[in-house]
Amino acid sequence: MTSPFRALQRITATRSPAAPVGERCEMCAEPIGDEHQHVVNVEGRQLMCTCRGCYLLFIDERAELRYRAVPDRYLSFPDFTISQGEWDALEIPVGLAFFFHNSSIGRTVAFYPGPAGATESELPLAEWQVILDRHPELTVLAADVEALLIRVPERGTGAAVCLLLPIDACYEFVGRMRLLWRGFDGGQDVHDYLDEFFAAVSARARPGGVP
Image (cartoon, rainbow, N blue to C red; front, side, top):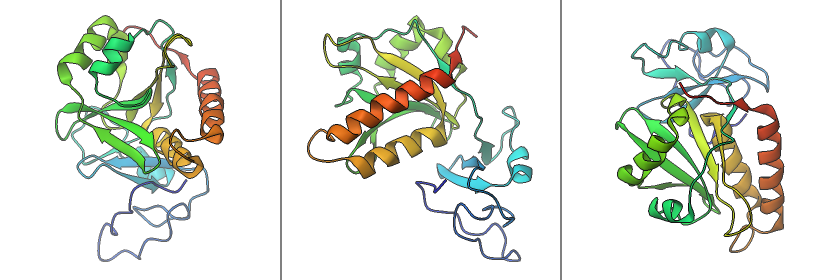
């Protein structure tokens, strides 16, 4: 997968220059297939395409590492609720956003999609904490490498949906939306893609439980 972030410079001066993203591991330059795994540069918030060997170096969630492996976990939270007033209090201008804990700044941040890609929103922490207090099952989210994707439908059109996804899947999702976006609200292609994406991820996800 092509990373939505710029590739890091090669790890050491003695290694060969990195090949284009998606063809070689960005750590050791070993060839990798189109289907490969990622690690996150925690401080720079960058994704790196990696081979299996390099990926396994960073899977320990308890270790204080500069890089963290992105897990392949999908969870659904069928009991999740959020009122329109609570969503408005988060100051997100659209009905869709993903949230992840940024350990380098010690707080949760939110991103919402649009024609320019993922836009960061200053998340009011008190309002977000109200939602976490009601739904402690959401605290299983792993910092930096997983995100909560929340979709709030238009008023009176259904219930909100909350899914836990790998962070790379979220960036791929908003990148695809950016390519499809037309006009003020994205256009029909974006709305169709939203429905297809949430249906596919919901079918893949297992129910999340209280930690």
